[in-house]
Image (cartoon, rainbow over all chains, first blue to last red; front, side):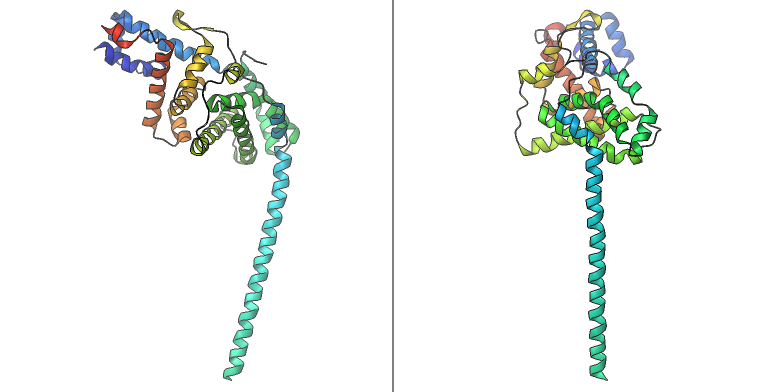
Length: 113
Length: 201
């Protein structure tokens, strides 16, 4: 296996552990490819260690996060109100339409009779 | 303040199933505790993906809104923090997507922002190789956005290829390719003097 082919596989070798026998065999005898592998190992280790550090959260953001339950329930109340009113409105509209329909039917009936 | 210790394990200890259960029942004191225990990690994840404090703050808020609304459907069989980070990752990615649609944002190396990111002392990495974290952060910053999010999620946060593909709305093959190319580019930035050709001959 050629160096270039091995190197192409190294970024995946590090974490996904694609341990093809051929790659392993090459690495066992090739110093320069081993050096390259150790660079990827170092990179993976450094990237993973980044997770262990965290930064301060802006205080106003924390306050906004704390307020989410209150805000949501207020929003929820508004939503519920709108929904209920919409139902009432739609109900009213339906009733009105029904009324018009009945009236029209009566008028027609009256006219034909 | 930077907190370079194991924030992770601390977070997982603080978020007990009982605390999550109380939040599910609408207990606001429990919610405050939950936010306090997890907000640093969530905000830092968003900052790492988005590289801009305002966007990171928005994505963090999106995350907790989704979590609060989704708590009722959260079953105890999954680890809460795992779910939380997945929501955070999705929030960060979708903000990134809408941002790149709207404007050509400035993600260029803002030193002030970089200085905010933790762990600026160099790391003694495995195999004797030393990578200065500042240089690593700069490298991540210079990485094309679609490679960066893939590498950050995979290598910093340990997400699976499947999770990354779902979040980025791409195929698993494409996700794998992005991680692979991102790592390669980073490696080239970190050791520019050592090129493949030179060494392979």
